[in-house]
Image (cartoon, rainbow, N blue to C red; front, side, top):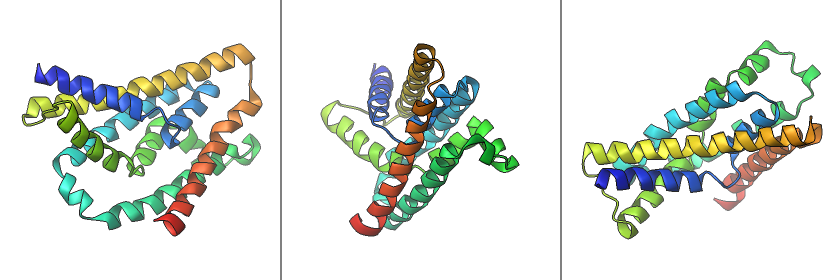
Length: 206
């Protein structure tokens, strides 16, 4: 029973935690608008794969991570740079995306998912806090290997479910409005805003 509880709590909190606009769900939404469903699915799989060890690190090495704030601080800057670059690439007109490197990266949902997921330091502190809360308020136990991996699997699948829903709704928008050219730019602008906020957070708010 504790295994089912661990899986369910991981799934639900991962799903809810992925709802606010962020670099990962904005990119998968962009892929949906561009009708790149296979790329979006590969991107989602990559995100889930990286999410698994990130959550594991949060559960097992919470004390070590929280005692090294310099790691998180530097990752914030790296993430801000990466997101800003991806935003600029997304907003560039197609004719300016002739670089084989850019084209290859855009077509590879898996590589893009791995890179952005690794450069997503918010995942570790989020799951440190979430796991502590679930242990305290919802009687989460991850003392056995089965409970731990059920919890981690729930986290990964919760992320997959939410990102696939984002892709589905993006597809619905395309069906409803035809080829929403202006709408396709919205995720790019939101990514750019997130990247710029990352710089502000690192240099002025941290």
